[in-house]
Image (cartoon, rainbow, N blue to C red; front, side):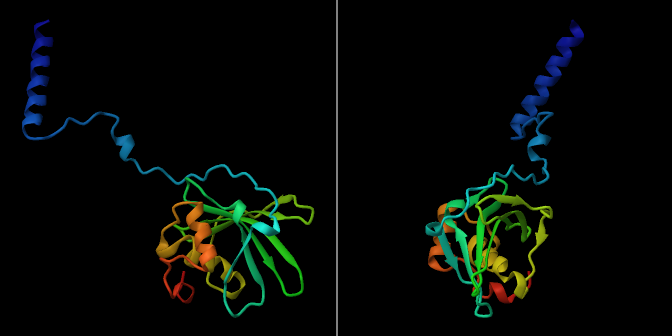
Length: 184
């Protein structure tokens, strides 16, 4: 009993000493709060097929005759830091490519979740890993979306309204003017 009182008094002295010098005792489990957890993607639900009235055009470059659209109804900004959207690419010849994709601003990567079928259903992608966006003619639309619309100055848009506004304006007000001309 006497030993327990001594230990208790010793603990009280330490706590008082720490308090005098503005130091706080550290709880044993506080390391977990400061731990850097690996990135985890949220579960993805495929959206409805895009409707013509929800398509928002965006500019890619003068080097292409294709028309590019994002389905405004499908736009989402996930808690995992991914902007997800339905992309519609229309060629001059009338061909139409519909995909459901995600952009990760932090790593400058994209992911293809599914491709749209003519009947409005989706075919999940077999090759759906995250891929680094490269600034090349074949995927310049991804570079345009990441630099000019959804990740201005490298930071993700705050919400869907900001992403939609960037598309309606023809670019995010904070975008870097030379975004497409620089290396990714």
